[in-house]
Amino acid sequence: MKKLISAQDIENLLKKGGDLKSLPSDALYTPSARDLMRDLKASPAPATETKSSRASDPSNMDGFFNSKEMQILKEQVCDVGRRLWERAYVDGNGGNISIRVADNLVLCTPTLVSKGYMKPEDMCLVDLEGNQKAGVKNRTSEILTHLAVMKAQPKAKAVVHCHPPYATAFAVAGVKPPTCMIPEIEVFIGEVPIAQYETPGTPPVGEHIAKFVEHHNTILMANHGAISWSHTVEDAYFKMEILEAYCRTIVVATHLGGEMKTFSPTQLKDLLNIKQKLGVPDRRIGLKECELCDNGEWRPGVTCNAEASSSSEPSTDPELEAAVQAITDQIMEKLEK
Image (cartoon, rainbow, N blue to C red; front, side):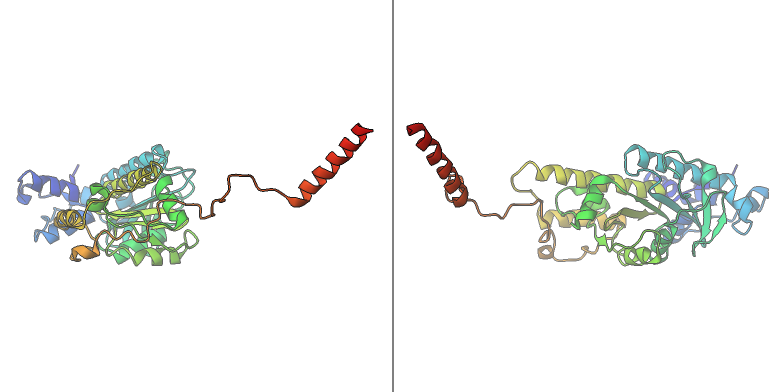
C-alpha cells in the first residue's frame, strides 16, 4: 500500500530535522500536504502509475472514493465525530465535518446520522458546488457552509461545525468572548467573531461566515453553534476543544465575583508574535499595543438596576389598611357589648 502523506507528517518530519527528500518517491499526498510542499518550494515526486494510483485518481470517481487512501480519511472523520459526541459538542444528529480531498472534491458527513455512531461507509463525496458524487447516504444539508469557507479561505482543508454548550451560549447571548485572559486561545484562535443568524443549510449562512475566514479560524454562529477550519480535521477539532474550554472557564469565572483579570497589551503582543510564526491568522497582528485587549463590549453578567428602597419598613396598601382597621373596630365593638 502506498503511504499517504499529510501536512502533519511533513511538519513532524521537519521538526525532527528530517529532509523532504527522504519521503517515499511513490507516496500519495493530501491537498494540504501538497500546499505545504509548494509553500516550502518543494514538489512531491511523481509516482509511477499503478493500479493503486489509478484507484486514487479523482477522475476515477468510484475507485477514488473507495480507495485505501480515502478509507484513512473516512476513519479520521468518524473518529472526530465520535469525540465531538462524547464531549457533548453535538446532540441528536447535529454537527458536520468535511475534508477537501482534491481540487474540486470534498469528503463530508451524511445527514441524519449521529456523529457518535458514524461508519466509514456512511461518508459522502461532493464537488465544490455541493453536488453529491459518491456515497450511499445523502450528504449533510450544511455542506454549503463548509464549501463557502473553503472557497473563501484556500488554507481551509478541513472544517468542523458543532454545538458546544458554553460557546453556543455566547452565540445565543450575542456576546463575543473577551480577549487577553488565557494564552492558549490567543495563540491558536484569537478573537472569535459572531456571524449573523440564517436558516441552517441555506447559502446565506456560508456568505456571512466567509466574511470572517481571512482573519479568523473559529467563528460563532448566532443562535446556532460554532465552526472552525484548519489544515487537518484533527486540528479543526482541537480548535473546538480550545474554544469550549475557554468559554466554560470565562462563565465560571464570572460567578466567582471580583474583577476579571487580563494580561497586558504588551503580553498579548508577545503571544501574537508566536502566533505569526505559526502562520495562524489574526487581524490584530501588526496593531499598536494601545489597540489590543479591547473588551469594551464585554458584559460579564446581568446586574439589577432597580433602586433599593430607602426604608427598611415593608410597603403598605392604604385601602388594605383601612379595611383591616374597619374589621378590627367591628370586632372590638361587639366585644364591648
